[in-house]
Image (cartoon, rainbow, N blue to C red; front, side, top):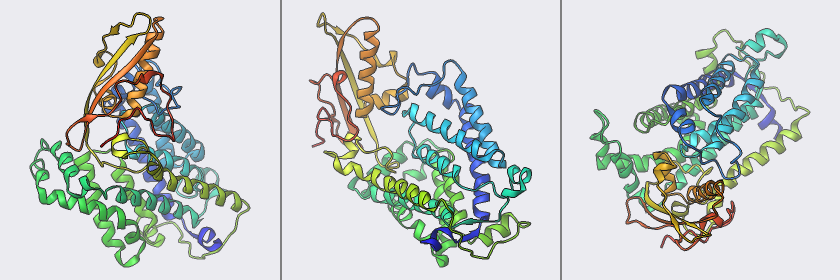
Amino acid sequence: MNKFLFKHIDNSGLIIFRIVFGLLCFLEAFGATLTGWIRRTLIDPDFTFSFIGFEWLQPLPGNWMYVYYIVMAIFGLLIMVGYKYRFSMLMFAIMWTATYLMQKSSYNNHYYLLGLLSFMMVFLPANAYASVDAKLKPSIKKISMPSWCKWVFVIQLFILYTYASIAKLYPDWLDTTVVALLMKGKAGYPIIGDVLQNTTLHHLIAYGGILFDGLIIPLLLYKPTRKHAFFISIFFHLFNSIVFQIGIFPYLALAFSLFFFEPKTIRNIFLKRKPYYNDDAIITPKYKPVLVVLFSVYFIVQVALPLRQHFFKDNVLWTEEGHRLSWRMMLRSKSGSARYKVIDEATNQQIPIKLDDYLTEKQQRGACTKPDVIWQFAQHLKQDFAKKDISVKVYVRVYVSVNGKPAKQLIDPKVDIANEEWHHFKHHDWILPSK
């Protein structure tokens, strides 16, 4: 255990990763201001669908979310150059996680991953070299790090990719139904749009995705296959970046390769003036028990969260219960329609509801397909009418199609959703069976 966790190795990989990570944090935050994402997601909506339990996290009023993201972008730059590193990293982690939890209409797994990594990076000595901190305070300058600083990334990635691979092992993915639907939406792309409709390519994407996710970490760890796996990774992630336009995630995924190649190789390429550490000393720190417990609990939670779907009734593709925080990436295509019926309890009269009056187009997609969002919108309607001293019941008639199959009713139309409680670890009986 001591050798595995506390043997010191050259820290070149971590130092370069900090620089790349800080740059990507900057690009993600600053890019959100340039692309209109902040306005569409956090300013234009009358309210946001936060993660249930975090309703108190709401966007700042007016245009202050632009300032919020610019501050985050500045922290990204400070992380990159290694100035006030731990404070900058902690502040970015808190601010990023807050924005992640305050809205889920624009949900991406890389948002979740970036939050996890940000808090993880707070604990790592990533500013020990090639940083402003090390220049201002030479006593923190080091050319080595304990092995656990590498393995936390490797284990996190192994969990992520393994669950992503296993999740694809279901009929609609294996027969390429899902891939075909995903590619259909890319038909308008210049040059490659028609190519993406090719059925042979669909099979390559479907089965290549399973194999890549399932094998990439072992292949990167095994020296004879490492270079080949790296070049495959470049193609895989650039393809995803171009076709799916998923922000910084493909480039972040490529940056993880820094922890798989020999530190000497990384040092020779990126930090030629840096002394190379090769003493292999084992230094057991006083904080060993705390560290072991902390990361043991963390990784147990990471392994357990994706398994919770199996303890819910029915299929996660239908109920969405256990879907988030489970590395279920681009696995299904859902469409639906919903009609919300609001009844005044005092008069028993129906009050007309138009989704356009309350929700943006992107929010409406969730309010027509996802039970948790449907429940939240029912709560919002109830609270909105309560402000007018009107007590209401909310009934929903929703029809949802999963992976292009015939639409079926999702929610029991006889249940007043607004007066139902939400349970994080229990199936909701007002979600109708998928079969």
